[in-house]
Amino acid sequence: LPQQYASQFLLRKRRANSFMEESKKGNLERECIEELCNREEAREIFENNPETEYFYPKYLNCLASHRAGVFRVAAVTPDSPADLRACVKEISNQCSPLPCHKDGYKDCIDGQAKYTCICKAGWRGENCEEDINECEDFNGGCSQRCSNFPGSFRCLCEDGYFMHSNKRDCGDINECVLYPNICGTATCKNTQGRYECECPEGYTYNSTSKSCEDIDECAENICAQLCVNSPGSYSCYCDGRKGFKLSKDMKNCESVTECIPLNLEKNYQLLYLAEQFIGIPVLYLKFKLPNVTRFTAEFDFRTYDAEGVILYAESLDNSAWILLALRDGKIEIQFKNEFGTKVTSGGKAINDGLWHIISVEELEHSISVKIAKEAVMSINSPGTLFKQSQGFLETKVHIAGLPRRVGGALVKQINPRLDGCIRAWNLMNQGHSGVNEVIQEKQSKHCLVAVERGSFYPGTGMAAFQINYNNLDSAEDWLINVTLTIRPSTDTGVMFALVSNETVPLALSIVDSNSSDSQKITVSIGSITVAQLESKKLCTPRKVQVGLLVTRQELELAVDSHTDRSNSEQLSTLHQAMMANVVTYLGGLPDVPLGATPVTAFYNGCMEVKVNSRQLDLDEAISKHNDIRSHSCPLIMQ
Image (cartoon, rainbow, N blue to C red; front, side, top):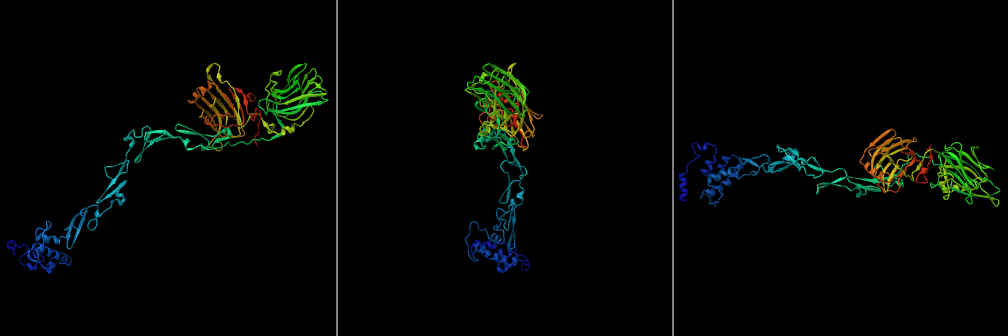
């Protein structure tokens, strides 16, 4: 034994041995450190086999390392226990080396052949090696996001939220208050967790320029026919002149709807006298008759018109003629022969819409006019109207109108246009003389079987008037005072309009509404509707009165005792047009661009118009579609 170890042995003090040692419980210090212990002695210390079997092999290793000469001398490493006591003590300590997870344990408690790991909060498992995911239970108590990490967790907030002081609840960040210019020229609207930059309807937000830009809805082919884009909006238009109107969805087009069916029955035996607005005759007959010396004519006649030419007969050389006309509703005769000219009128007014038998007969020294076989006029006539030539009486008869060349040759000028009907005619005692066959071939010459007083617009054209609306007292003042008496047959159409070049500075229209049993009367200036009234009485058998009063300062629309007023800034646009030249149109519009006004469909129905206290007579228009009936309106279909 080396001197070093021998000296240590001699100087070592006994720590555990004491009196009656064998009668005491086994002691590790006494039995295995101060003395050498065998397996049985170790068993007495631990009192169980598992811990003994664990301890004893390691104990022998300690002896080999720290008690030289007993078994063998083992190499000593830097991290080896300092001495035998330290080496042996570590063998029985189940917590050394540490069996617990270094991050998860709080403490390790040594036991007999076992150990107990005490876990920190957030850890579990035998060795505290398993992290507890707090986010799995009720989201960890977080109001939004829960983020788990080893041994703990953290509550997080979504973008646009901030964490409250309790570290669990999130609150919304009001970006609009925090950053006042965040949306530029748009409106900032705070929402939960974010914000929105809002623009007015029809605009979209440009995040680069931070401004609102107009949406060109027309680029998306949103309209069925024509689309007109405007700042923040758009408008769809349909070609009303072709019979279309805008659907209720304000995008598609549909045919103008009939709301009151009319009795349009015609009879080819009834000759319509107003086929041509230009006032030329609707029928021309030429007679060359032997053994006839005098002019005669008899027919049934019906009209509501007050003035117009019924027939005009003349000699072949145009030197002699006779005119049968209506003026102020009464029969008028004008004639010219070699002896002179004469004008005579008389009898009662017959423009009452009833059928009247009219006869004109040239007698030996006079011309007799009878109504219903009763004489109403007897006009002295020296000589005959027309001379015979070689035994024949040759004459030309023009029905309803004047030949173009007659012009100012009449004794007393008259408007030749006449809205009326003739039937059962007998000219020059020749009966129908083939006239029925001529009429039968052309529908436009057929008269309606039943009519009432009024003007009829069939939805195919319009009439134009040149009317001066200026106030004579002031060049800057003007007045538009329109009264319409209407009985529409369709639900959409222009009734009254002022047109200046290709613009429509004022239009009064009937328009289909969103309701199935009502329509609207609208007033528009250009493409802008400035007044409107809705009524359930428009498409009905009764007539409705519509009033429109417009000055520079105000516009007033009245329909069936209801009123809508407007002092829209659009009136300045109308004023500019009134200072120039405007043409008045009834029943529709000329070929203006689509989009110039909201409604372009022709009006269909009966309508009488008074402008600035003057009743308009369609026979006095500067132009009128031939299909428009100036003084007769069809009845409602029963």
